[in-house]
Length: 114
Length: 113
Image 1 (cartoon, each protein chain N blue to C red):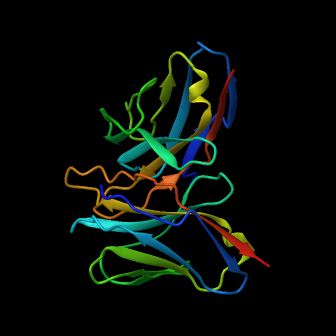
Image 2: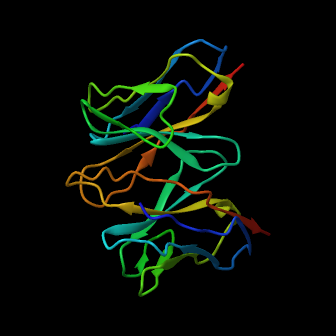
């Protein structure tokens, strides 16, 4: 599985967009980019994933560069409840003999401030 | 629908004792995983399973054992507890399919003294 690099911490003002970067320069063609977050030592929570196209759901948007070597998770209007550790993970899709296991890095601690 | 259930939530063990951390999911997921998380660190994969009867080692398997006799249950066994195993343990499961999200339990906080 490809490794990822994230900044250890970031701050964001409440109500503003939070843009969390992730580098994954060794990503392979069959690897997806996943984002999870962990709020205050709870179990990690899935946010979004993508292969090469930009993705959006009710929680966030995922922008993947054309060469797929980096991506950005965007929380459009951050709230205090978005304060968490955010993990960017590159993962081979499950099925067809693949385990789909998630290998976590250190993540980015996002602090949303009033 | 309970999702992924871990028991117990908290446990204190003495050095050398053994225990089993229980994990059960009611979503009929093929894939299940055990992670540990030390303070201030990311999650490390201990063991995983792609189906009943099939298990494999992850990044940090030493000192642990697992079994997968049913789709629903994936217990993690500590045979001789050591202080280095003080951690928070998370169980997760994924549905079958090519691109899926993992669902995590709320964790078991284990202290070995």
